Image 1 (cartoon, rainbow, N blue to C red):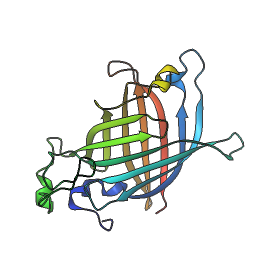
Image 2: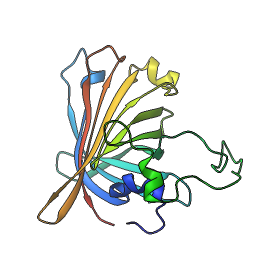
Image 3: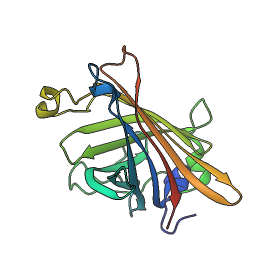
Image 4: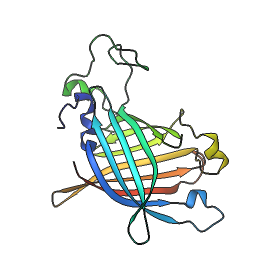
Length: 211
């Protein structure tokens, strides 16, 4: 287990660390009137352990040029991932408000009470983009795989909406694959204008653990 990880976050332990890899970003969603282009990218992702009941997520990416050199920097992502459970007096927040009293999840037995009907654990993730977009995800983690979707609270700033570069609904999947002792973290994102519309691939990345 990663050092300093609370019992509550053990279902997310497989994410902790630094990851580096490559993938593609598709322009299909914003190129309805033009031939979509897949841009190659290199991405660095870090999930770090804090002294609270969440992981801090940070992702930076750059384009890969046609000559395989590293190109311009793309908008970064910063977020916080946690198990979804009722708030307690011992939890800190909102803002800088400190908690008071003990937390209830202190052992593996306590954690089991949070397991859902599908055998996994409900999770929440809030992700802000450097361009001003803000996504709030809800989903579950089960057997080393995360499936989550955007929910109320997500926001696309007007300048992105006006430019036709926003979406109203998104889904992400994260999972690990271990082959010959080498573990990779794979993740994909699909987006749509709304929850009722067809999903369109946006991002697909394969990462190697580097720390």
